[in-house]
Length: 368
View: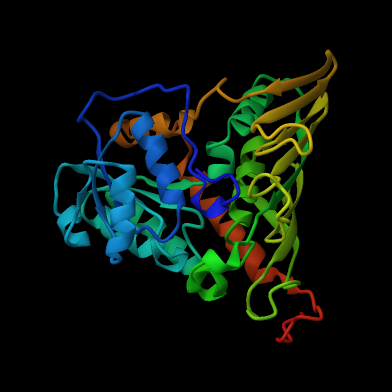
């Protein structure tokens, strides 16, 4: 795993807890357009799932996938996987604008679905997914990896639930990413396909806000986007931010960008700051700059004192096992379906409401 390449960042757990027996939860991957599929499969397999099939229209992508997961069968078509009654779940990291289509077909064939974020790029897609989930009773999971696949974030959630900082009143999230433009596919620069920066990498931020704040809903107060550095792609957005307020009164500001400098030792200095009535938490998710290249650093200050906790290897990634059990038992312990869908809707709303900041590189007059 290349720590400088966010598109292929695929965490592996060291605190493994299998929740099902060998061969009892078979899964397949359809759509390998984004490297997150590797992290998604890692998490599910570490929780006990067996990865049986893979399909992508690009044979080279399938070859690389099978080099990582020896023994996985390259399906001749998507239909071969969908028609196999033993497959319980389909995981997909296809082009974002197409992910909902894979999900609809998966549920139509009696399979649960696990989509990379953003799972949707338009509100109409979410509505179709809601309807299909209601019709089938199957799960439509979404891989919000910056919370679910980071032990610092997991531990922060545990501390909040234990009351370590009192009531959460504000969250600030930063999600900088390295663009690596020469290694990106064409769809990466097309907002019609990736959904826009607030819909795409902003999805991590909005989902973690709802989770850390213990909120069920929120309102987008203000959002904006810009293209500061990519004049050759005038519709691309390399910067975005937004302000939200939750239904329980907690507030949120987040900023995302594709401006990470080459000198950083990882693909992005992702952080979250969580303020409560009795203390505050900071998580330095992927690096502690100029001090530690290690991940999962959590800083806690509350009424008892000041603490630095290196969370790596401490708590694991419980979402994946809980999600498998939710699929099998019809429960909602990993993440409620409404939470997954509402976070996605708010990302789309923030994107649609965003004002375009005019810059020297802007080729379009999109300012509201």
